[in-house]
Structures are given as structure tokens and as C-alpha cells.
Image 1 (spheres, helix red, strand yellow):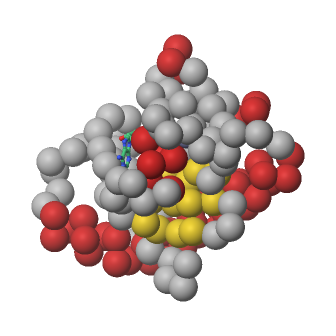
Image 2 (cartoon, rainbow, N blue to C red):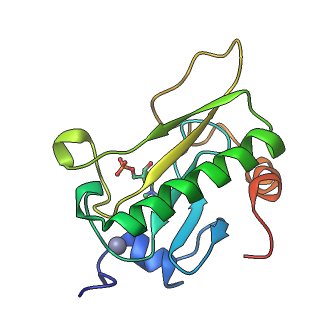
Image 3 (tube, rainbow, N blue to C red):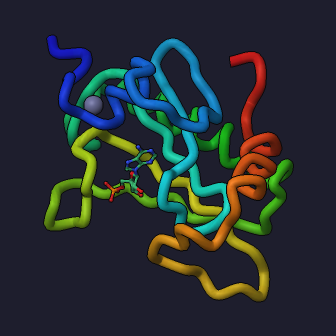
Length: 141
Ligand code: AMP
Ligand code: ZN
């Protein structure tokens, strides 16, 4: 059973080969800030095991991943804070999946602000991203 793919950018993040702004980690899941966020606090939640599609996931791991996604979303709602959020999950290039390692996007949203469905890279300074990271990281993981 293949657990990691040495060529996969998310496997490289999980194994520490490339850096990220980590939000959460447990035995089976890993979460980090998206490098090209649609909105402030845009976070990705991934299984540690390399699987490309949602439909490749064993039941138990999928249940754990969605419950973890809910936990992180609840934390972001309260601590960022935001008024709501989208969960986005793409499978296949035809569905705009660019990294073939299963992931849930958590995209924070605010009242009276039109949802943006593309990267807002460059809109936030490094200090602002650091401040957001401090707010949403779940410590002790
Ligand atoms: P998708 O289009 O659903 O496959 O989304 C992949 C996401 O991964 C995009 O939103 C990218 O901005 C994000 N991404 C790609 N490389 C990195 C990275 N090194 N660190 C954090 N996020 C990344
Ligand atoms: Zn991977």
C-alpha cells in the first residue's frame, strides 16, 4: 500500500520536505494554509496517506477527514473570525484538481462580502498572513 508519493507536493509538505504554515496535525490528517488563498484563512485539510480522489478513500479515513475538517472550520469561524465558509473538494483535472492528493478546502466568508472563487495572492502582506496563521493554528498538534 503506497502511503506517500515522493513527487506529490502535499506529501512533501506532510513529510517536511517543503515548508508550510501548519494549522493542524494528528496521526492521520494534516492541515495547512493555502499558498494562493481565495480569502484570508483559506485552509487545506488532507489525509497523510497519498490518495488522489475522494472515492479512493477508505470509509474510516474519510469519516476522520470530514470530522477533522469540521473541527478546523469551527475553530476558524470562532478565532479568525468569519461569518461562514465554503467547503470545496475537487477530483480530477477536469474538475480543476491541480494537486492529485485528496483535500478539503475551507474557505472563510464574511457577511456583505462577495465570495471570491480565485486566488487573492499578493493581496495580503507577510505580516497579515502570519497574524492569520496565529489565529487559526490549533496548538498542541
Ligand atoms: P485544487 O485545485 O483543489 O487541486 O487545489 C490545490 C490547492 O493547493 C490550490 O488552492 C493551491 O493554491 C494549493 N497549493 C499548491 N501548492 C501549495 C503549497 N506548496 N502550499 C500550500 N498550498 C498549495
Ligand atoms: Zn500526496
